[in-house]
Length: 395
Ligand SMILES: Cc1cc2nc3c(=O)[nH]c(=O)nc-3n(C[C@H](O)[C@H](O)[C@H](O)COP(=O)(O)O)c2cc1C
Image (tube, rainbow, N blue to C red; front, side, top):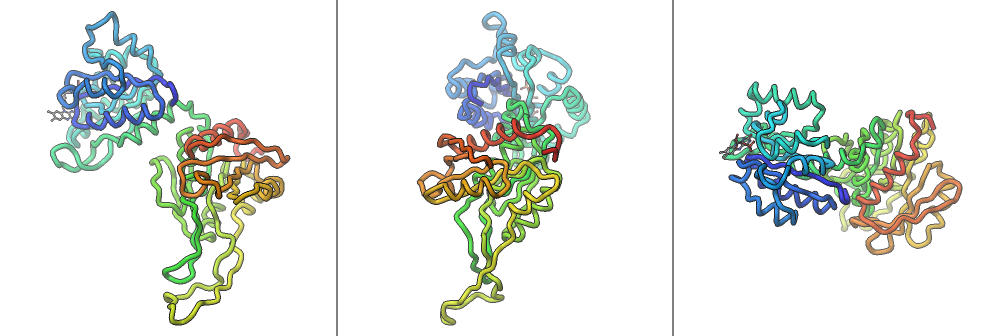
């Protein structure tokens, strides 16, 4: 979102207080944010708060300067109205410019993202239903409303979507959706191989890298299935399959990868599992057990053997030299392999950052700079969108 120009329109609902956090999240992502408010919004939140956060004047009065609404409308790359009241939604739907917010929306060719928020009765009123039909027909993006606690303690449908969900939709619009029409499968997290009902053999993978990739792919417009052992949250458009063991990971991945355009194998899958699982908790007093291990299913091998073969991204967590990863990149059948040295602090397991060496089957490598897992995920998905053939399964 670096430097992207976003107008945040705030209308008069209780959820206006959440828009302060929304503005902050957009700014944290590097966006240039300008706020336009309705007069009613000022009953809920002060213009000064937004001015202080964005370090920009807030537009409330249409009749200041020369033509503030056209100036702002033409400046915007994206307009977000959050919260969008029944009143402001109707004005936008039917072209009633009336105030600074609606005039800015009407004076802009930028895409429009609306986050309705109101009591359930207002949301379900035929007047609002008609408004929403008109807005959907106009191809505006509508996020929410959600169900949950409303102002005054009522519970029902009409609560504004959470700011992070709105940010996700905004990023998706601004990305240009280079993966629209593509189906991408991502695996994430570390598998757990049970020893007894209480204990397991596991690994340090948190699932953060795989979840960041799945989120990035969805933001770029792909239809995403995430096969994960992690309990980290994911945005709503992602189809999620929760697994625990290597066998479950293999079965689920092979099932959902059929016909996928791309499979990203970011999960840390156990190579070995106990041959038998004790049906009761092992006791210290019985002495140290001999645990016989056997090989698990090879998820990667199953995916690269698929016909048609999807574009396959592998991950190789190494400690120290990346030589073994180089061998894997040439032998395993991946289109690209992302290797990282998890023995260096801030790289790999459980961290929010990573440093990647990209390896291709022809032996060539490319160093990616140290960065957040979100940045690396976006870079990977841009690369995948460049390298994916136009038709599913055509490589
Ligand atoms: C306490 C209070 C809470 C309100 N919350 C909402 C709301 O969440 N959604 C909504 O559509 N209208 C809500 N309204 C009504 C709007 O403020 C009213 O329709 C106003 O005219 C909206 O103007 P605007 O769209 O120009 O901001 C609320 C009114 C009050 C008094």
